[in-house]
Image (tube, rainbow, N blue to C red):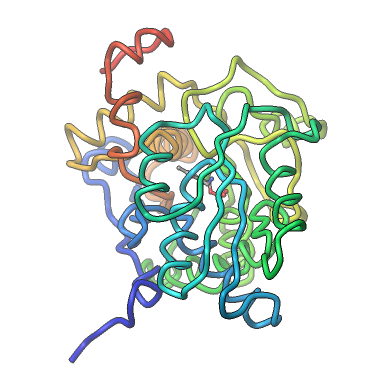
Length: 325
Ligand code: PMP
């Protein structure tokens, strides 16, 4: 028999997909780690499991416990699945600007969902601060704190990094990824650089985020008008991202991300969300910069099903000045 143990045993070990059209177009191997195939549907299943297991190991979370988190959706989805599997209660604080699909699925899965007005991080009523206060006030509860709890990055160091190394037989020239918490980029970057310091780490930043300018000019400054992508972009260096080796930073436009999303659907057969489109746009851009003959790996973060009423609705796109291509 070849079995996995429950939901938790099914997290990770995702396929690494070669994208044939984009590889032919660039002369590079363009490879996408199929994180949308995780059992909770996104790259965040790994972080959610890493955070819960670290809290259990530290004796902070046990029978009858509650996990509280502020999340744009995917981390919450991963957390509530694992809470169900482990017998914990799950409380999610989410900015009300996030897609209806993600809020609906959180409720259906069994989370207690608290939508709150979107506020900047410096505001005490930012969703992350609200989640921390709720956890502090609840007995037998932990705040998952995905942004600054480095159990998030450790999960990627322990799993995503080694999987990529094995799947490519150690032939990776560049790893390209956008950041929300930074856990994926930071954990994978550390692992790949430990194996071979020549691997280039390329940060992808959506319009409106502050990291692109920070990388090129050393100062956190939001550039561009904001983005329709969800779950990525930031105004600060999280504890997860801190100290990460980054070699280059790219900021594709939203239209480039949308173009890639539709291309991935029509020509590669993959139905993906906006952050995957941004990642692939940056991977192709980087391939053109470094020329043919290289292997470039990126992350296919979540499925397009989470964004049917936005990214996949031409009228909604048009209302944002974007076109379905
Ligand atoms: N894409 C999507 C759709 C996400 O939800 C997230 C996480 N918020 C990311 C990418 C970025 O992952 P990380 O938090 O590891 O930087």
